[in-house]
Image (cartoon, rainbow, N blue to C red; front, side):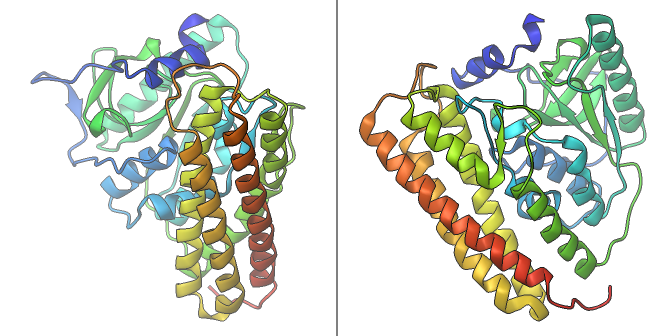
Length: 347
């Protein structure tokens, strides 16, 4: 289905094309509270945080990225494709939202579906979203007019009203049947409050981080976590990495490592029983974030085309930085494992 093409929609975003129409005075139904966007490259993190804060949770992008595990996600394909930053089991992210104070309800069709399945799923997703908006609760939506996540803040007729990390966080609108949602329709709602102790949540977040860093691929072209560094280096050195996807991956994963550094720093500061090993993880993630930032600066976004990366100097510098980042994250993993081996206080 052409309207769900990942590359064409993402390329339009990179070219700076409009992604929606700013709403004017109208008869739309909106949630009663402000839903503020704190932009990041990880748009699920941004959208989830906006919803959680609107619903009264004490969260920010760092906590959402860390508790959900998105800060520790990395997926690189054989061409360092643009899909890497959103290729992960989305259903595993919502546990972080529950640890931050909201119960969750999730709707997914799955990665495959014939046209009738897809249309029916998008219709049902819209019905769920409107029920949540009627109840005064924003929701997370996958697939605006490009494959990115947004916070739905209202609806009118058959249109979503949403905010996302792009377009200055302003309110935009989109017919619900025009979603660009490769992987299938997805919606995350937050129907009620939840209480998880800070100690229990922090320890669970560290366990979850290791799950993300050691994830096994379900497709031969994917490599996750620590293995993704090697795949990225091979893609660059072999002349297979595509400029658009490579640059997008560099920005997203560079941002993710910054979140990982800041989140682990917070865990160290509020869990004195694990302070020593977590201090090692902080140092390692600082080095990792600096190395990935160097990669992001080598490959700014958007790059202008999707030809193979060919600059030998940039490739060599990037591969050196990726090697440093991998070595640092290996040390971070060892430090996290050491922190988990300590007896934690009862929740």
